[in-house]
Length: 238
Ligand SMILES: [Fe+2]
Ligand SMILES: [Fe+2]
Image (tube, rainbow, N blue to C red):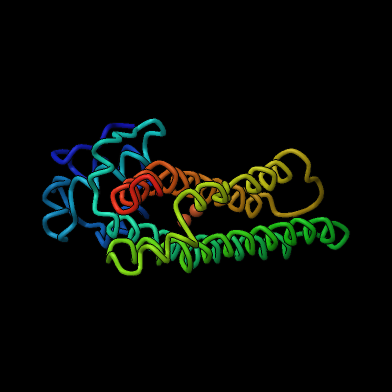
């Protein structure tokens, strides 16, 4: 996968990594940009080009982390991006997996249905955990950051919550997906539609990859950026 710069054609970036399509969509950019460069597309959509290229590179290259550059970004821009990603999980990826799972259950012959229903339950449980994780960030973490940016009631807020707390309880939400894939790849036998099973596995891989990158952005960009703000506001009490 190529390193994405502002002078690269956006179409070439996508040809090098098609998983960037939903990421680009989160910025409001629609496909159909012809041969325009990343810079030109960002200008057209009023998107911060530095932020855009950084996010795309974080998604494409696991070790891409230009720390000094990241800490310069407007934190609200980052929060807005993370919220859009949550919305994408809720409205696109999770419903798609639910549909795949349902089709998988339907495709199984009667004696094998029971086993597949157990897998479906495992997924349902996972879905609840993931939704709770997203909700917690949306109702506690993001509002805390918004208040910090507004510099309102910061002392009281900071007595109850901080990035240190977020960091200590921030879990990897993708781990159970690995177990789910393993069951489907290694252990499940029986009579069911293989095409449906394969689509289900592909889409679990997609969600897993997207979540991993999302968590990396929260851990490696959001936490240090907000910690820096806390340091500036509260000094040694941060
Ligand atoms: Fe998140
Ligand atoms: Fe998270």
